[in-house]
Image (cartoon, rainbow, N blue to C red):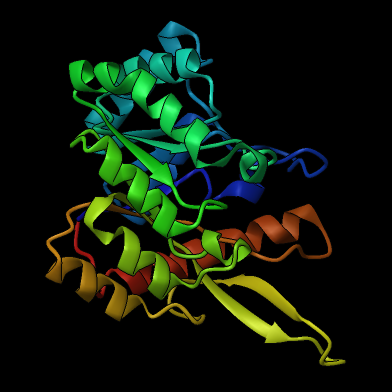
Amino acid sequence: MKLGIGTYTFAWSIGAPGYQPEKPLNALDLLSLASALEVGVVQYGPNLPIDGLPTDELHQLMRCASARHIEIEIGTQGLDPEYLARQIDLAKQVGSATLRWSIDEANSVQIGIDAVEDCVQRVLLNLERARVRLAIENSCIPSVLLAKMLQRVDSAWVGVTLDTVNSLAIPEGPACVIENLAPYIASLHIKDYQISRMQHRMGFIVEGRPAGAGQLDVPSLIASLRAMRVNANAILELWPPEQSSISETVALEHRWAVESISYLRRYILN
């Protein structure tokens, strides 16, 4: 298990529609941050995809990662099997042993597990030929349904990206998700959180926290996965709450990244 960062460690710093920092991070910037944090993996997700990079820039990224002994992982989303097949080829090209995959979250509830399984079946040969493992991220699909689908597919080249918080949207807590999906984990997203009752006591707020500062039991999580011989890279992800300005939010995000990696080193050594 290696410790790493990804594009969702620094989502505010990269930017989102309506929330653009003054100097958005690019793919090379993320490698520099990984070097500064002394982690060995960078996962590029759909919020900073590298498939659109010109060939020379992609090769530069690969050379830079190799020189710094940083492993590149990539992630994608959507249910287009032809696009997914191209992402599998890209994963092979950049040396990404896993391809983190989420379905389009805007439509995921309506699409359902059958459409996901159909897409997986269509790319199985691509995965086998490329020797890339597809890691389906848990989100709006109940973990028991995802586990049953993986049993039906029955391929060593298909597993899950286990995100510790995403399934709260269903809702499912981390313990349930880990219990159902642990045998299939190919990638791990460590994302800490805090659920707080609102001041008027009519509802709750879910917010991110630095790793180790929220309600996620990180020591038990890592110990459980090691006991089950799960050997997946652990990628830090963060949900910093929006501050009074984008620059302040970005600064908070960077502080949280440093704090979180420092905490996680107690349990994960690169």
